[in-house]
Image (cartoon, rainbow, N blue to C red; front, side, top):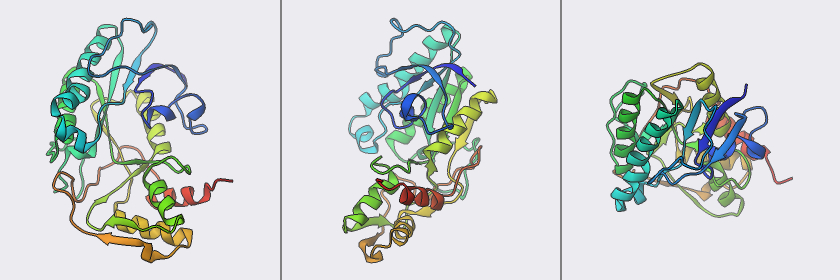
Length: 270
């Protein structure tokens, strides 16, 4: 199915997997156009919008540190700018789709459903919670996600970062008390496609099905790579602005993170 949409956030990790040569096999949305805008001061003046039905609004400032150190700039990129952009799109009959994060929660519940009230710990989480509220008032779709990882060598995501260090015989310091359920980029793209096809509204979740600590993940990866498990150094003490344990009730099924490790290990450079 071809969706008459634009992707805003051309250089984002998710955006790069939604169309063109970077798509993941059959797991992609064949988009007609791909644009990157300044979300702090959005303008659609030079973009041909005729015939479009949806706009996926990706990008923004996702670093917890950057949001904390520059809350005004990050607020413009993460809240006020995307809201303004969405209004411009709605005026043209184009449905905006927003993306959010499990960091809108504090980790105090064993499982979060899409209707749970946000309880953010960080400035980034607070900004995304406000964006979600604004989006729902507009009637826009919000896709709330857990941490996204890839399985390609060199992609710089979760298992690639760990695996590259382990293969180089370098220590990986991994927290034992930060527990989460990451989701494979292939499942993210499939979930977005299904959400659009089903005309989903409100807030939906895209997340892994099994939560584990970074330490558990790193040990499992070391085992699969056949490297010394002592290279994985256990750490404790989750940062106060990060939820210690977070698990979203996912709207769509996803592979287990262990399967993601297997995929990364098998995707050698040859």
